[in-house]
Image: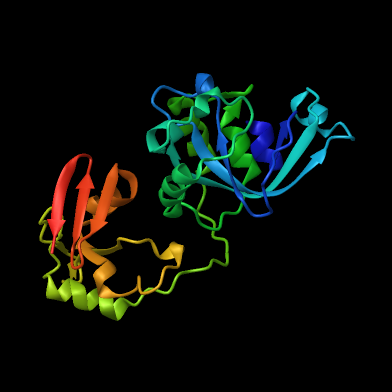
Length: 258
């Protein structure tokens, strides 16, 4: 794992097919090396190319020769998850030894899962290497102790450029005002910020990164509290547009929103 993260490369004896430049690669850590309860997929990168390892690069990185080197770029962390808890198909991804192509039905769920966590990320090889020791993940106490030492100084800031989706705040604020900042799922009335203004959040039922038409409009917006917002992104959620309104099922509990 450390070799993959530090070099943005993966090695395999089988050449993947139907993969194009820019495709997302999920990076899963072997479950036997994970602390109890930790999810295996915690990083992703973008596919660049797959080339035969004629220069024995795999031997240098992993001390073992593999036939192909998969080159990637832009390694960044995501909200950790287990693909078996996200998938909707019956495909057994645990049986995969090196790589597998995600089924289209599972791809939709996975892209929805990682969409909130993915951002432009400047790879920090020092931090990556500190997370591992002799190929095994440090336990939480060891990792926290090492990172406390690393981050004992004044915070440093880096300028990065990110692409942001345009979100019409005037419409969001109008909808929050119409519904009184009350969560349309759990009924929480919102809270007052220190400046005296009321606070609630707005969720787009169809994610804007799907670039579907008219999804910036009010029919696609819900006023919700921060907790329900996280649930809509990370819990087991099913939804149906009622035209107007929505039927939303969160962890088996149904909510009808008109």
